[in-house]
Length: 137
Image (cartoon, rainbow, N blue to C red; front, side, top):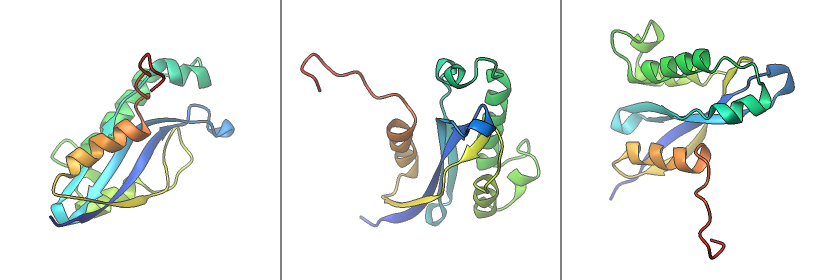
């Protein structure tokens, strides 16, 4: 089986930019060799409200949905969504000081299913850990 390089960044919600506290809310993954660019998001309003009780979760969700739309391209994805996939990835991962920020870009290798890798990264980097069973595991 042939491995393909991919790049990913963790999408962070930074409710109060001046405090630099964040919650991981998604992952953006690009695998150019397979023509793959997508993002997945998962918001937990309670976690966000621990950092800022006044955060507008609905507005944040709309902005995160726009990131997913830009990744996927298409007629409703705006001007950035019309760029080639690699340009969209670089545009989305550019450093900025805003409520939504990206981690540094990391590289990895996947087999023929980058969507599965995206799901794995969401589980590992964003979603809360599974509760331990009664045996402490």
